Image 1 (tube, rainbow, N blue to C red):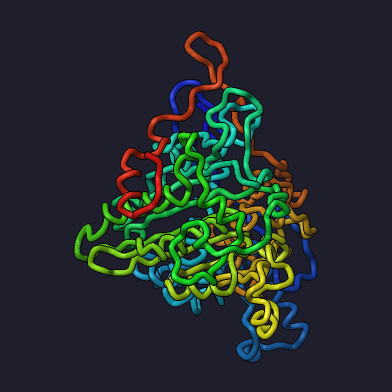
Image 2: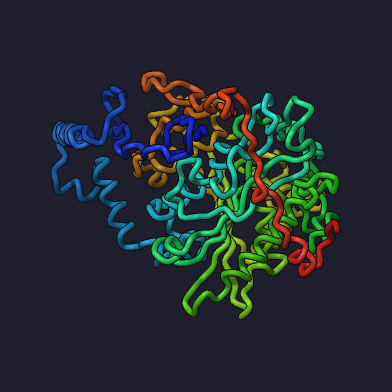
Length: 529
């Protein structure tokens, strides 16, 4: 069975049983430059080189200051020169002072991340990368190959999902896979096999619901976390043109909402709520699958003990970011984020390169429900600027007030963390639309971001080669092949007779749980018999 590299594993193949690939050494390459370098000899440096490079940079800076007649006393009046090691030392100190287990409510947006982005809080950065990797896992597991009879499905079983991706240390277990009908008008989003006999003609795998295990909940997170990850689009941006680009009330698709003025983009709403009763994977809508599973997990882990806490975190990239916002809203609107005792379970959305989803009233309703949203964007990415290119939150308030009833007047929700790929010395500065939208590139930018105006310094040692997994974004001198991620033998394996076949993939645990009817009936949602 072949294992596919995730954020920390290389491609390996074995013909017997599955085993995890060995972890990559964390001593990955970094580049450190002064803010205004006189010489820019850009080359990849290992961590062992960094101390010497930092010393050289510091010496050059001292010489510059001496030439300018600046003294140590004067230095205190201006901005202190910080080497890469200085920045990492500062982050480590901050991280030790505010461990996640003690600060998770703030990291989840309790105070709308006030004071955590400028400068960038190292714990928040780490969590944004971690949840971004959960979204990236949807791409790494998805079968995009039209020559595969399983095109449009997950390459791995639910029970082996994180292990198969080299993410066995994630501390989460996948509780449910999510599917959606591919019959709606988004042809550039869905993937379909070219063969006649396929796993499903009318469904696509859309992501998963996972829950943190006991050890992770107690010792790392400080609470039990229900995580929902939605699949988006890797590089194909044609799906934006498929959008009907008009708003409609969420209540038209049977989402309970007290205000008919709450509207979202119709294509997102259809993708979330439509179903195909003739398809065993899409006979329940993505909405029904999400709500039933969140209800089940909340009931399972509610009040484990007196001091236990729960959180619900929804993540997604691109169109998956839109579904993350819509599903988080729905969870809160349905009241599924309340324990039996009435305690509110925090709902947080972390999106990457996500588009606008709804109108101003939708944004206001999200705030009323207490759903916290953090949007990570590349300033050169066009997707976050859509839909609503002209009438959006950037327009004058008076104009928005006049136009708020129009079906193409959109508004972003939550807080925005704006990154710029031109600040990274690893990435090509040119603006290629698909590169600017790349999730791995955004995670790379997060790792090097320390605040507005601060130097780009990689913090965790996250491998920059991951950027080129499905793109050609890294600078040529780094010598990382573009689009290097390949599925071993396109999923072909040898059977007991030595013949090459495409192994059976879908297992019973990847289908809908038998108790979904029970939970849907308690939620009073329509469902097939």
